[in-house]
Amino acid sequence: MTALPRLYAKGYSKTNGETPIYLWNLGNYRYEIESRPLGTRITKSDVFEASYEEAMNKFEDMIDLKTGVLM
Image (cartoon, rainbow, N blue to C red):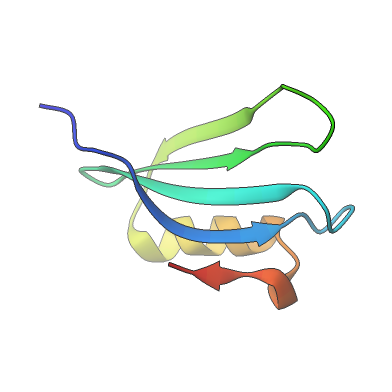
């Protein structure tokens, strides 16, 4: 059985401040960090297994902390 993805957080990239980045929970300690650069149809994603704290740390390393929002 596959769990429905749940959005945990959203922020914007450190590099340009415009690219939205999302942290999704996929169930059973699986997470996905997804970015959708503006002006393209490309979606970049990284799926990994980790604890919530490890996933949040990885997410926070990618975003400008002033733009992060927990859902």
